Image (spheres, rainbow, N blue to C red):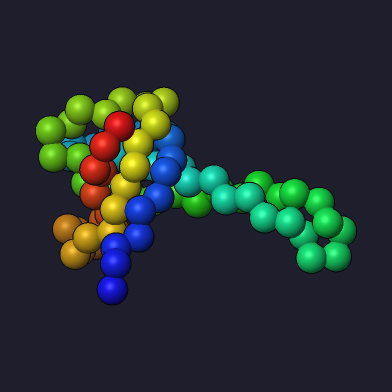
Length: 76
């Protein structure tokens, strides 16, 4: 099964080797036909602490690195 890849923006880089990435999803409301934006936060592993808040990154699923980290940053 292929690993999921998501695009998002780094919202926090306060912890060591960890970034919080906000991923935005857009979909059309089934009844009102209005475009709705919803965001979700993912905690991703950043080995070298290279990414700062505001950076656009791609994250990929991986084996669990800690209690909350199931994603890793692959590119900027």
